[in-house]
Length: 248
Image 1 (cartoon, rainbow, N blue to C red):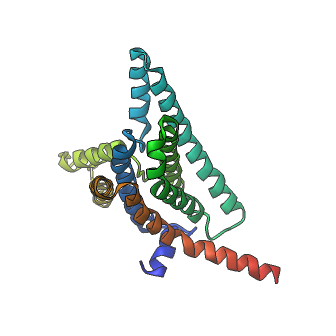
Image 2 (image 1 turned 90 degrees about the vertical axis):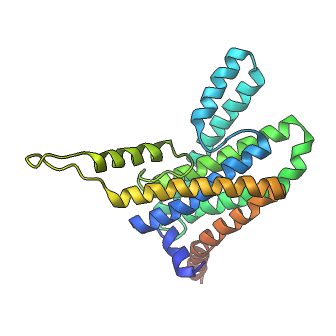
Image 3 (image 1 turned 30 degrees about the vertical axis):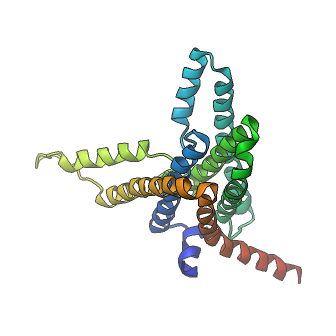
C-alpha cells in the first residue's frame, strides 16, 4: 500500500474520497469478521439489531445464559464506541496526526490477539468463548464509531441495513418521473456508487472471512490486522517524531 495513500485515508483533514476509500476497506474487514467470526463463535457481532432480537427470544424461551451473553455483547459494542469517542476527542484536543489512526491501531491489535489466541481459548470452555464474542463486539463498536465520527455519520461499515435502505431511496429517485413544471427529483449517482461499493465490500469480505476461517481457523484474521496496522502506523510515527522533537 503506497505510503501517501495510507496517510490520506487516516489524515485528520478529511475528504469525501478518503472517507469512501477508508469505508470500503473497513466494510471488507467488518464483513470478514462478521461472517468468519460466526463460524468461530456462532454469533454475528457486527450489528446489534439481531443481538437485541435474540435476547428477547432467549428471554421468552428461558435461555437466561444466552440473554446474559447478548447483554454482554451489547455493552461491549457500546464500550468500543465509547473508546473510539474518547480517543478521537483526545487526538483532536492535542492536534495529533493519529487522531483517527489510534482507534485503527487498537482494532488491529485486538484482531491480532483474536487471531493468535482464539484457537487456544476456544477449547477452554464457555467463559473464554463468551469473552471472545464480547471482544469481537467491542472491535465492531470501535470501528463503527470511528467511521461515523470521521464521516459525520455519512458512512457506516459494520452493518448494511442503512446502506441498502439508502440504495433503495436513490434508485427510487432515479426511477421517479418528474413533471416539467415541478422541481425535478434527481438521484445522487455518486452517492449511489459509494453505497453499492460499501455493500459489495461487506459481502466480499464476508466471503473472504468465511473461506479463510473454514480453511485456516482463527489465524485468518491476522492479515486483516496487519492491513489495519499498515494504515495506522505512519500517523502514529509522525506523532512520536513530533513528541521527540519537542523534548530536544
